[in-house]
Amino acid sequence: MYPIFKSTSIKTIIHKLPESFIHYLLGDSGPFLLPLSISNNDALPNRIIKPEDEEDHIISEQHTSDNESNQTPPSSPPSFPELESQINQSIKTLGGAIFPKLNWSSPKDSAWIGTNSSLKCTSFSEIALLLKSSDSLVHALCHAYDSCSDCNIHRPARFFLALRKWYPDLQPEREFRVFIRNNVLVGISQREATTFYPILTEKKHDLEKVTDEFYTDKVSMGFESESYTFDVYVRKDMKVKLLDFNPWCEVTLPLLFTWAELESEQLMREPEFRIVESRRGVRPGLKTAVPYDYLDTSEGSGWDRLFRNADEELRRQTRSAGGC
Image 1 (cartoon, helix red, strand yellow):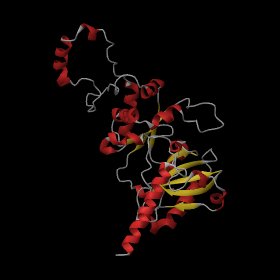
Image 2 (tube, one colour):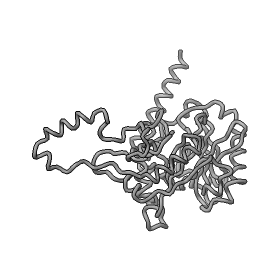
Image 3 (spheres, one colour):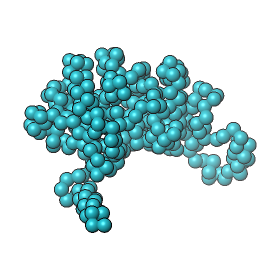
Image 4 (cartoon, one colour):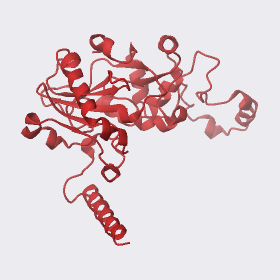
């Protein structure tokens, strides 16, 4: 879809991934190995033995017992020189830093292991580290269509890696998720629901207006599906940039909505723009390494009890403060 929305999106370069690389990402046998890099300047630990430790390693091998010598040797790190060369060139074209994304998913659950605990990557090896470390990508690689009732396959025939230009100064309070049901905009949600941003209460009307206009003018006639979600970034000058598309199903976080609400007729008649209106409305962290439908938030569940207890504690603290 990027070519269709290129003029309204973040600059992106897309690479088709060889099936051998997909097998590498899904491989779970043997030690954790990063691909051998074609660059001598690669600083990541993608070698089993560091050069400075080579002498000690040779000495230890001389004392290996006969039983140990019969064991299967450790796996050799894989190598994807052509793919690495192409990706590193694309990173250079995009200014030296990118964040990676596969067909539907980015490796957000492995951001902790990346540069500055983010998805910022400056080399092929950094991308491989994030992708290989991500549990959530396994779902995208093996079970992408499990929630689709009209589909009899489990994964796409081909996988693509999108390299998106890294912007270090993007502000999370300016990201929003838009929900489209049967070609009707039914809801807009603040993307980062774990924080209260006062500026959003001041600009709520304007933000809703430009986002709605962006959908009507730029997205509605270009996207093939009838029901889907997409993420946008609203700049300070109120110009809107398209960030991503997501499927209309429970693997996509509904953020300040519930999927029951989004599929109700009420929002078809009266769309809503939801933000965190105060510090009391802050949601717990929603970034998870499993699909959203794996989390049980129904009445009586552990999450339901947690939310109820938190609400009761908040009311207790409010009453105590009022009595001082």
